[in-house]
Amino acid sequence: MQPLIRLEHISAAYDRKTVLEDINLTVGERDFVGIIGPNGGGKTTLVKLMLGLLKPTGGAIRFYQEGKEVPEISMGYLPQYTTIDKKFPISVYEVVLSGLNKQKPLFRPFTKEHHEKARAVIARMGLEGLEKRPIGQLSGGQLQRALLGRALASNPQVLILDEPNTYIDKRFEKRLYELLEEINRAHTIILVSHDIGTVLRNAKTVACVNRTLDHRPHAEVTDEWIEAFFNR
Image (cartoon, rainbow, N blue to C red; front, side):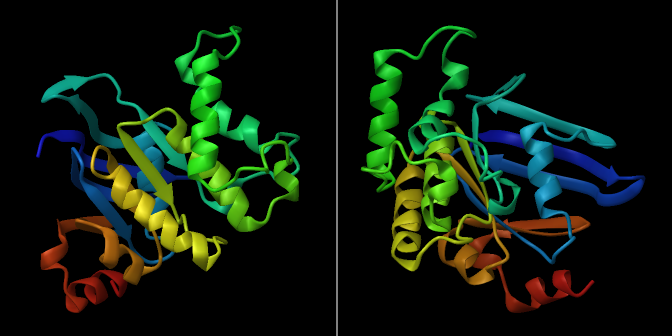
């Protein structure tokens, strides 16, 4: 498995308080990494480091394409539901289309192909008929689907999802993981979740984070290993 992201001896801190320490993690092509750990253990911080939203206090983050180191790779991101401003005046269609911003020059309109792609993603997310609806009028599950559509619109090499099944209705939750299995055939997925059962049902490898990190194949995950990390 060729590497896509490599974290080498990474440390991170907030307000001079160390959150992550000496983190080593390699994420490969078409991997499905499940990230678990206790609240406050550093899961979201780890994601922010990979996305470049936070700079490490130590160590290096490297990106690769076809085995060669590159400055960056394309990543789609579904943030935690609680970080979304539902009062922002934007429609479902505009949310999904905004996922294609990096594929057009600044100040240039979206092309016909961009609009076709947005419509296809909306259909895939089961949001047909809601294109013009403001996000403030959506249910929690509908909003999550719109945000997942935005993350997928650009066809990223890596899709990062932070607690994706929060507020998603059970009917779409099943469809979500079917979609992720399908997406994973061509793309790498990093899934952060407090729901250990969901991670173990879907991930190929599991990273347990609690200030430090241990990463192992799904087949080597044991209850004792998880409990040891959670109770440190």
